[in-house]
Picture 1: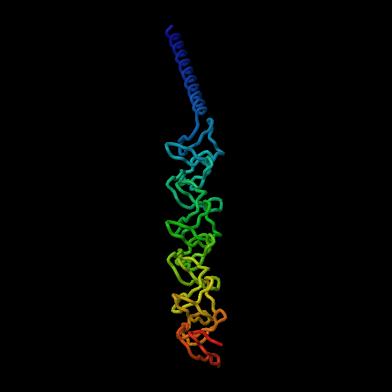
Picture 2: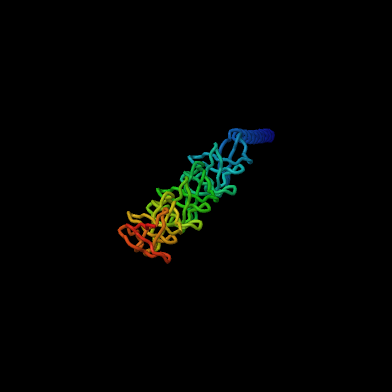
Length: 299
């Protein structure tokens, strides 16, 4: 009898163990199914942060995902913490650094063969500006570097000379912008400059930082006074009025000779480089003697 009681008890215990095992296995399976069906978003699993959609890792998805106040770069279903790139999301292109959007970034970054201008973490396609990168200042137009540009660009209150897409700080030249030609020195427009600048083989008259095409005047440069007509130096022989005095110009340069000079079909007497308005008498010129009355030759 005792033997049979032990056998029955053993059978009962085995049955309990078997039932318990079945229940545990069944609960475990049910828990996994329910968890999978509910997954959406980022989950930290082992050594990765996986991105789920509809209960499955989105293995073919590359996007941005918000988590704990930051936006993370998901590539092939996982956060790529080593990635620095641009990523399009909701119509904007965002700058990703070390796997998440850097909203503080204002910089240049290369993507698909072009250099783009990032402002406050995203590409600013409306920007026309300068941006410093690797020691040079680059010209940005419509949000990306324009390497073909030779132009002027206003930045921090000054106008800078861009050549081949970047500021040329060594430039001393003229640059056309919005219909005017501006004088550049040290890579910057000099609005206080008045002088001469050589460009394309001619010497141009700069006044207030830009070429004055209406000017007929004298301009001092490197110790000489040059004759300017229509904004450019003319290497001719003539008279020019400057500061109330009529001066004698020979081959484009003020000359202090005593001679005769034709101007507007009239011959004038010149003494010491100026028209001798008070002189009346005779003057020799080219082997002849001419009568002068109040500085004008009378034939």
